[in-house]
Length: 343
Image (tube, rainbow, N blue to C red; front, side, top):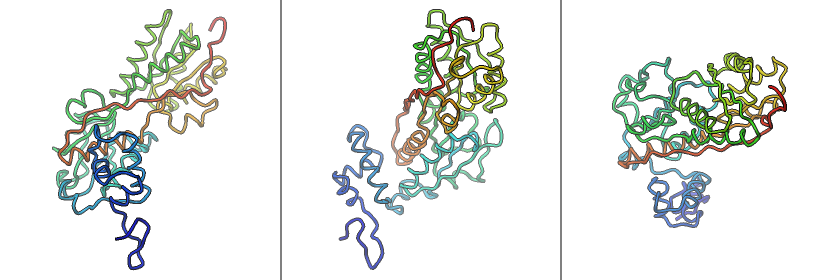
């Protein structure tokens, strides 16, 4: 018998589950539970994470032939996303693809051509794919894919009622933004909203409005724009041109915040001395902006990874529970106390 890293006939031996168990300091049954996604309630999260990291470090791959008997025939999963241009969805793909690779599956990415119901890229989806992961989509938009096993990501409670779902706790993130700005002394807020009819943006807007309404003297004005810099600049400009302009702009997305920066500078306002700005998602642009953007970090790669794990559990006959991943408020230098005196 060989150990991980030894060779057979001059070639590297393929790591086994026993190799993973020995390297992680756990039993083979624990490895089986973790890599079979059946560890919840039976293995601690820390141990599960250690086993997963060890398996990835050793390059362990499960026996694909054996798993084909349980998971179907194509070894292909379809990831449906609204667009391929947003960095957020690239991170979702990376997380999903890493879990898929550990389990011998391929991931095909498919962005629909428009906002209507998506047609499948396959003539017979049930013969071409084993399952679907859909991120930031509605159930109605997936009607064209037929009866394939489905996991919904970042799509809200309505989707969770029809399929296993992994969401973000976006309401908590927006409440954290308002609490941070309120602690700095802000009471006049502007909401640069995404002009997109998706659950996540409706939830962000509702949470922001409720949190500001709960503040003594809190006011909130809202302007919507497309998730691109020029449209966001125009939306933010409408707020900054109000007679009593906001002292803080809360943006639904980091790209919207970039447009808010441009609107502020076009009016001679300095961030954060004259105006505080926050974003949401914490994609690369949040750190590229000057000053760096205070935002809510959403674990997009973890969203994709947990979505893929849930789909694998579903394909093996399990009933994965729906869940919500927490965000994290990342305070940088785009927020400060409001300016003294009239706005």
